[in-house]
Image (cartoon, rainbow, N blue to C red):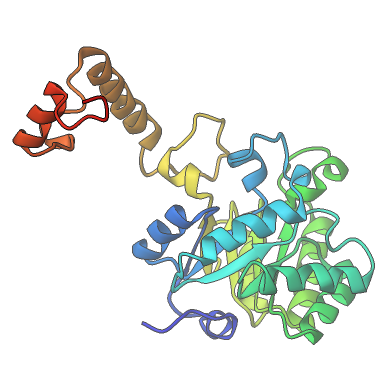
Length: 283
């Protein structure tokens, strides 16, 4: 199958639902790609999912480039999108473009994602002028958690719903190839999806979007942190992993590991001579 690109994602508007998931390293990227992901997002959620931080604003550009490069080295068919971290595009236009370019040049990504609505349009246009595809992200934007007063659903009121719709129109008109809608009531997401000509990818935004995204570790049950309402776990791999390690550790203690067929052996005559001390430098 052909490599997924930003133009092919945009062209998928109104067609088969787009399948997007996060990944932060080569093994998870290979798993996501084998499962049929259209888009792999190297999300700034790596901050709290993998690196142990409390929130996404704590992750740095260097860390994001490091993880993006790890994902792209897996050479997935899926489009790899690098998530621009906090304060990497809130600076001058020149620095914002330079930071976006690092995701392409050093990280090997095919596009970048940044959060925010109409106020981000000048930055988005500058990045697009540098021939770098941009994915938008509106609604609940985790990098703005302090300004929002927490992780709260956005667009619940009439005025805020219209503001989200205006933001979506502004991003689409600016030239983004898709928009993530996070933490948005389903009716608002449906109206945005129907109005704009680029795909919407929902996370906590109902069924009406052109695609859906979740965090890799959430889908697979790879941790025990509290999950958002919109997350569905499809496996409990953390429990499977703990059970496997417990069995390994028990075999280590009992001497059952390594077994004979997991051990390298010398030819019998060499082993016998070695034990007898034959051919040693002391003879």
